[in-house]
Length: 161
Image (cartoon, rainbow, N blue to C red; front, side, top):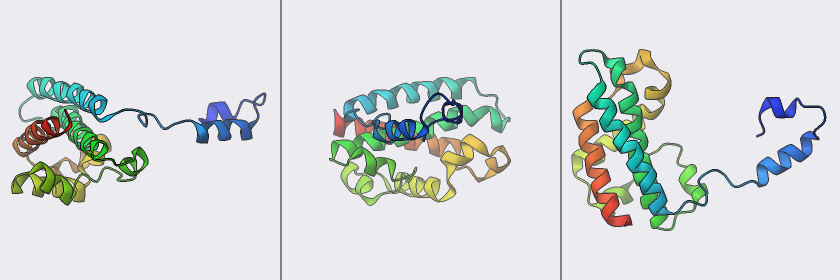
């Protein structure tokens, strides 16, 4: 969908804008699995830096690190899916669902990691970390998040590269 400011411009035909927007490739659709891994690495490195700068005892100070960690995990898993031949539209259609038996079996994830991916999906931690500071108590433990991030990173990088 085109932005409101563009649609409100009376000199532009709204039908043309909507047609062009629907025909344009979705951002990231042309990225290959290695490029997605590289993007995940950037979020991984950001997460590590943000964890180091967070203030102990102040849960909200960990929110940016948590968000970058969850996003990196999702990107690593998206790279895995793309390497396995899933189309970009299928990957987007998952809507932040990072729990999948194929991850567990093909990447040989530990039970704790598989359970954590399931818990993060069920709790919608990706959305909570972005928009809901009042729901911070629903997050899984930071050390579990870091362990999941490290395992996903290691195993998807081996699988994709």
